[in-house]
Structures are given as structure tokens and as C-alpha cells.
Length: 306
Image (tube, rainbow, N blue to C red; front, side, top):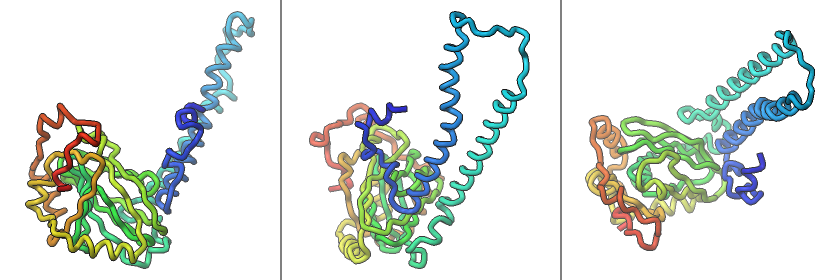
């Protein structure tokens, strides 16, 4: 039980799940701790009995020998009632958690400070191996940089071009899979400016190790200024640019962000979903599967960042 602390140097600073921020992250931590604690009520006694019984009943201890014993009402009750009760409690906790943090309806955010404000909509497209964030209302897009305002609900709609990836910001939002030809959702709200790291939880090939992104929470005024600066970008993310350049398999070493104005941002996400439904793929070149440098300084820049 002490092994995780030993591996972490007796500190939880690098265990981001233990430092949740925002309501969604806090609920995830709350239910995780409760469910873990309930399961330990079964695991710890079982481990102790596994150690104690062989020691107590070893032939060298001359323990009482009762070959005709076959039934104990107390043991039967304990062996069945306690696990059954634990399963009922775990089921209740799990179902409660699922409904409270359901990203499609976000009931947990109904009473959040930003509930009365219009949500920020971000369409997330997972490629091999980058995260593309499209802002349909602002007509902008970014790569590997999720920027949202503090104090407003963020609604994420997700899909993927080629392989399934798990979208996860441990301190902020529950993990949700982004899958080709499918639409999934996630949501969160952070009330103070901050910065976090998000990443993919599903191994998806050669560039998986570099498939992470910044999550920046800005004050509303700073966010508005950032949006205007990206809208003025000369780089435009059109459907053709996306399919011919962005969606092509590439490793963005160091998760270098890119920014685009996107005049048709509202239609890009739907086209990507439809392409995947129609069987469109982006094959990975053999060169990427055979030689992917792990040294950032030696790695070529992502084509999308040029």
C-alpha cells in the first residue's frame, strides 16, 4: 500500500488526480476516493486473512483439527452479506456519479457560477497525433492549445479522424473517448485563471507519447483579446487544409501550438465525422512507425506549425 508513495517520493504533487480543480474534477475525485475506500473494506481483510490463516493453521502450530466441521451460520452470513452490501453500495455510488457528471446534460454544472452565461463551445478533433480545437462561434481553431475563459461552462464535442483517443484533463474533466465516425461530449467549468495539461489515454501509434496539449483558463477580457488575435491570423483552417495537411499523420514534438482563423469553422467538424463514416482514412507512413525520435531537439517541426 505504501508503494505508490515511495514511487512518488512520498509526495502527491505529481499525482494530478489528488489535486482537482473545478466542480467536475472535484466530483471525480470525491467518487474515486469513496469507491476506493469501499473496495478497501473488502481487499484489506482479504489480504490479512490470506496472511493470518496459513500462519495460524500451519501444521507446526498444532491447531485444532475438526475434520467433520462443515457449516457455520456466522461465516456464511459474513461471506455473503458483506460482499453483497458492498456491491449494492458500489452500484449506487457508480450510478450516482455517472448521472451527476454526465457530459451530455452536465447536471453537476447546473448550479455553477457560470450556469447563467452562454457556454463556450469547442469542437475537438483527435488526429494522428495532434489535438485540433475548433471554435465554431468564434471562427478560429488551434492545435494542441485549448484556451477558454474562466467562469463559463465549456462544452466539448469530440470526434477523431483515424484512431480512438481518450481525451483527459485529470484535474479538470473526466476522461471521454474521441472516436472516428462518432460524436462524444465532455464539459467543465473553472472559475479562476489557471493552466493544466491534457493528454490522450489510449495508445494510438508512434506519436502517442507527444499527444498532449495545454489547457489555459484566461480571464474573460484576456480571452476576448486572444480570440481577436487568432481571428486576425493569416493561416486559415479550411476543410482542404485540414484533410491535406493537418489530418495527415505527423508528430508534433513538444506539442507546439498552432493558431488559425477558420471562416467555415461551423462545418468542419461535421465533415470530419461524415468522412470517417464513409471510410476515409489517413494511412501512417512506414517512416513514422520505424523512426520516431524521442529527442525534441532533433525532431522535425510539425507541418501544421509552419
